[in-house]
Image (tube, rainbow, N blue to C red; front, side):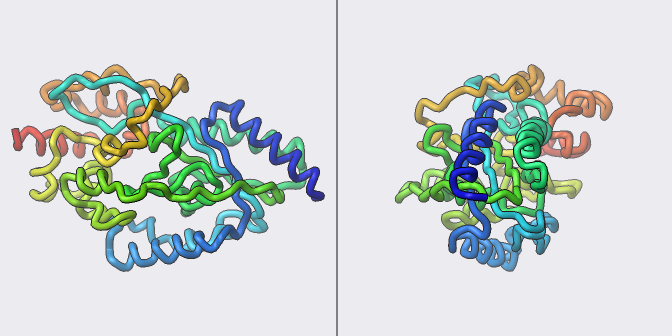
Length: 314
């Protein structure tokens, strides 16, 4: 494809991504800059240290090479979807991480990316594509940084200077040769507010989060009947995920926009849930409430375990 056609197609695809409601859009070329290799090596060290806890899928070797996702891939469209809603929970009630307030973001992003992929097919019928969300064996934050939609912060989240870090990521891999954006430059500077605020000291050093110590890991992924004492002692009211390292981030204290995405507006029960009520729910009631949520991976018995762990501490 000649340069003019490449620039034209790139422009059209980005425009389509914004039309679909994405808040940050960027493109990276494969194989990317040297930083891709550095981040891949960093993942290897993280795994060797056992920081993934029992998340075995993190060691999937496919992550090391983007070609494993799509043969002949030349470009990556990275998109960010703002999920910030300026709504307060009832003080003293149970806390659920913002990512789970609305409907399952995997479905929301996939639906939008499919429309972009179909548009690409009409423009380039011979091209191949692949959608990657955070369930794929793919370095999603690394490629988002490479595509210029944000940098990886010290809490390991992607931060965008206009949206902050309340942003879901999605990627469309393509065999088309698109025009790349400048990779993002990390600008956390000397700030270590996220590291200081983590109640369990899970952010052991900048960019290194040890899942074995992380409240989000234990409330979402830990399948043991009882949570470790050092976790329950520091849980506060968090029963599903934890937003502390994002809440203290100065980039999230700027005038960041509210999401207008209908599917990401908070469910009523999530903002008003109480311990007594939640512990009285049957398995079917939990499943009914969680049916369309990204939180459905938490089994009803795990919710009860998490809530009881908090109740025992108060």
